[in-house]
Length: 287
Image (cartoon, rainbow, N blue to C red; front, side, top):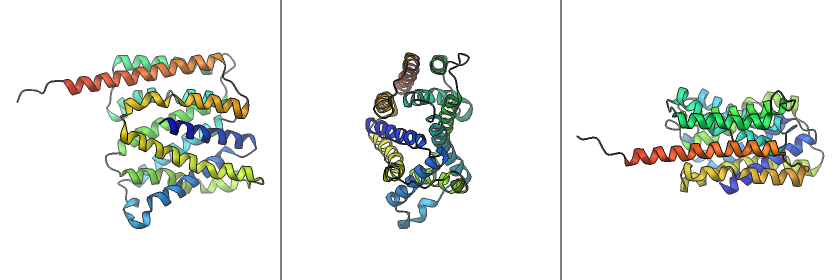
């Protein structure tokens, strides 16, 4: 989880640099998933078994893949005007939104304590964006769109996890955006003229694929509750890269809002752990 956060920070930093060099975010996002799809194809080696392409619902696979693409695209659009620390701070609100959406969409209803944490976390988002004070801009709107797209991607992953193989979920989440967004490539695509641009563009797919692979490894050996706090360490990488690469430092509003969001997210993790332990320790009903 520690390394995954660093890898995703490199991904965002690279995308922000390419956007500052004049490359269109839709093209950057497409290249990122094209590289991811190639690496997933080579890693999964579907020619050994065509079962990889088997799916219970292709439309749902495509929709899930587009939610992931939307999260990436909106994030890259946000990075045109926001600092790395600002975008990741708003992204940290995702676990709270997932907690809220899990009730009506999955039947996993949260109690009043977790709902209170959701509202407190939303307060942290308001501290960062400060709507009505001339600070909230299109970049913040894109960041919120990225966060919401990611939430629906996670909700669909939970919904489809019992019926789809892990390999198909990995493969189609990379392939769907590449195929469906091909018509946009001639519109937004541009040929790099410097070796540095080529190197960074080609590295995007590696960062995305390797980051997700690291997440898989992490969840194989540790629980979600145990890993959750480490996800928030990504703010350290984002602040560091933002300063080293772009000379950006987050203001006190951003840092304060981030602390509120992180505290709310950690409370939700703590509360879910308590409920899980309570359910495990509950006596069995008499037979």
